[in-house]
Amino acid sequence: MLRYLKHVDGVLRTLLRSRELDALRRWGISPGDLARRISTVRPILGPALEAYGRDVSTPDMAVSLHSATLLAALCELRRPRRVLDAGSGFSSYVLRRFSCDDREIWSVDDNEQWLDTTRTYLERQGIDNDRLLPWDTFAESDEREFDLIFHDLGAIRDVRTSTLPDICSRLAPGGLILLDDFHKHRYRYRARRILARDGFEVIPLRHHTLDGFGRYAALARRAA
Image (cartoon, rainbow, N blue to C red; front, top):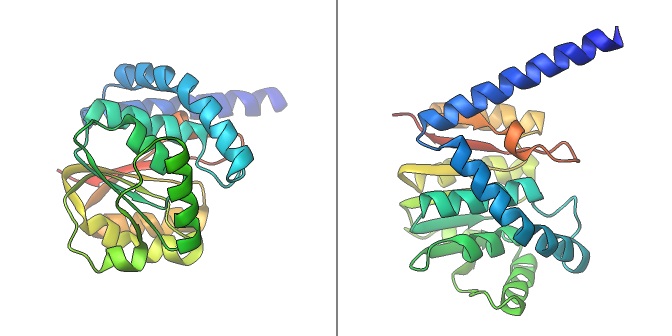
């Protein structure tokens, strides 16, 4: 029985991986190029995230290395000019470190104390810390047309879900949203409903982002 269950699990993993890779190709993202970029940035981000988890946050609270390397790879492949970092932290470092030189990055957070922590961390890393704003302030702005958005804002039960429609409205045509913590069943269900209502397609990225805590992310874009 155990051997049979392992076989079924292996088959399911292969099918999910195949569907994920096919969807990325359909969206114009080469899985081979993505894998090569990830392998290039991982040696850079691994030690940085380890130090971040020791000195600033904790490994289970900080963005996973898998999601961080994927985010960096997307920045290098897509070269987004306007980026929204919804939920500041290590992602703020990643987006500023790996985006193109003439990019414009906004980092927002619903926790102003944590926003100050992020500002200090970026300064210590020699990374620019401009355009860091409280979520309430940013939500009142007209800043839109973002080419890439990382959505990791606030508590999953309320803030993360309630802000998703606003996040979606700020995406530029052809842009991408990377949604962290898609492994959370209730959040995944609610997020899918919101995204479908707003005309988005979603790719769960288990193959690329599943980590030791069982976390994984998803990629979304408006349907063509």
